[in-house]
Structure formats: structure tokens, C-alpha cells
Image (tube, rainbow, N blue to C red; front, side):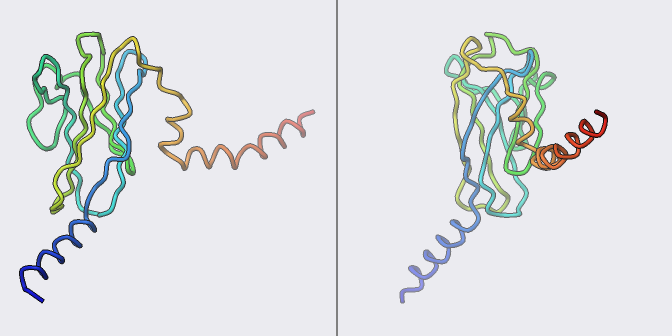
Length: 161
């Protein structure tokens, strides 16, 4: 086998083994804040870097990032939380001037496949309110605890009668 072909095959296998894949990008209103959820498939334990940005007026504005510097206009209103396979952007005091195409960009350290990017168009009047149930799903241990405690709650009600 040609050594160049062998190296190319090895690099292809390594790239497939280490890539981060964004599965879904969604947005909703949580009170007066915008929440953008970036769900990804985790294929490595390497540290994850992220960037949330918005494109409006044909210009990219970085909202919150570990890859590059966030713009001052968003820095005080934005924060990000990381959960298992989920990166959430919260943008406080969301208004129509914050409408645009939001982008989630993820990259794992030492990932040779490049950054994973997904976009979503956000228009305030078309956003749905964030469902309380989806917040429980993000932390399945709370949901499991709730489901396991239902029989106990029913038993307490029965005893008190």
C-alpha cells in the first residue's frame, strides 16, 4: 500500500472518531430572554469550544464565545450554560432589534474535522414560549425523580383520607 494512501485512511478514521455533530438548533422565549439551544452529539471527551453569533445587516456579530471575543453590545446581556450534549445561549432583554440569523458553532479540541455550524432565523413574533417540560428533559435526573416519587405522593394522599 502506498504510504500516502495509508496516512490518508488513518486521518479519515481519526476524524470520524473525534467529530462533534450538531443535531439540532432551536430558539424560544423564556420570559423576556431569548434561549437558543444547540444540541450536539458528543463523540469525544475533549474540551468543547463554542461560539454564538448573529448575522444581521449582512454582518456577523459575536454574542458569546470561547473561540473569539464577544461584542460589547451583547456581552452584558448574554450567558451560556453547558449541559450534557447541550449548549444554551440566554440573551436577556430580547427585542425586535435582536432579530436575525443566529449561529451555533462548536469545535472540540484536537478535532481535525473542523467546526460544526448550524443556523436558525429568529423573529420575535414567531418565537414560541419555552416549555417548562423541556427544561426538565435537559436534566433527566429531575424527571426520573419526579416519576419515581409519584407513587409515594399518591400513597400519602390515600393515607391522609
